Length: 438
Ligand code: URA
Image (cartoon, rainbow, N blue to C red; front, side, top):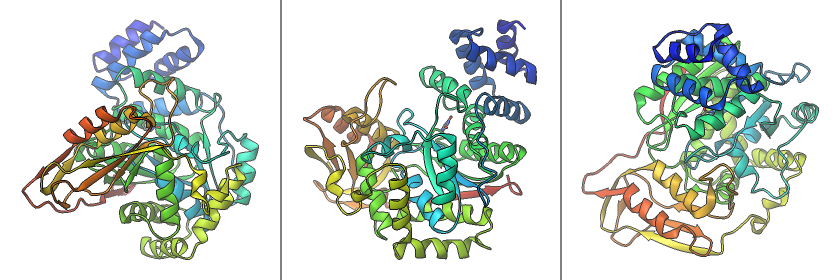
């Protein structure tokens, strides 16, 4: 097959056949298709899109590019959640132990930070000792014993996604609906998940800024996931402001512990419970979302979710004493304030810029080889719709010796818009879709 002809076909809006997609993907992995050719292909997909059946074929080919976990020996319906990526999104770290405390089995495979968004694996790295590199057998045994595990992608697990994602990250082709669907669903199907709730983030801090695009993405995730044999639903959730009050790896672990202690910001807790309710209904552990919410709120309030968190962290060699002794978490040596330049009401937040502000402090990667400073980040004290006085503290920056501080302040000054108009607090869950409504 002639690779430039395949690229040209997609460039002209054609629909690629299965053997053509396979030729491109397997060729890229084996080295017979060059990186510059796959970049051109990705850009053609970015502009021309893919038919749903074509995206499903790409997903299947990617899923089969490496090891597929067999969790059939683990009793129960394996149910998982995946987010399309946001700022301050620490949900997975509360959700996995929470649903496991409710009797669910959650085989979670998570990723690193992408662009301005945070990554669950980077957050987990700020728990001293935590190992996310379990073998398949260790993963399976932990799921049987604890009910949840959060691991990272290895070289032989969906290598096509690993390679393609790295390519997309440096060729401005991340924000493509078929490419996002194939990337996420290939991993979920290969991880042994039988049911999935997608947290499709929508707003300025998400890859899909408009509700229209986020809905399109959610529909395709549900329909391709269903075609692959999974039970899938999707919630469109708010990303026009950071989730919760912290952005940055160790700071987000503090918030996770707060929520597991039955405290913490309401939006983080509520979105976690909403996603968890989907998972319990998928796994037949609750007859209705209402019943599931009641169960999950009870497990947060009575300490069961926290006990499961400690069991899970210890099982993966992390130090569970962080719960009683938060001084074990990394702490930045310096603090600075970002205060309201005028009185008024917070009209909007450019959430992407807030994510970038955390990155420039050292909390994320600007290039993939960067190492992350787990201690730095932001505490966001007030959100959209809040009335503020001139000089009131909006954000506390946790920094190291001023690194990135001025640039972060500049980003915040542009990101947080204060005006006169009253603004309603933003709704947390914007829409819900499943196979019957997608
Ligand atoms: N998360 C993924 O795993 N892949 C994407 O393409 C976007 C978010």
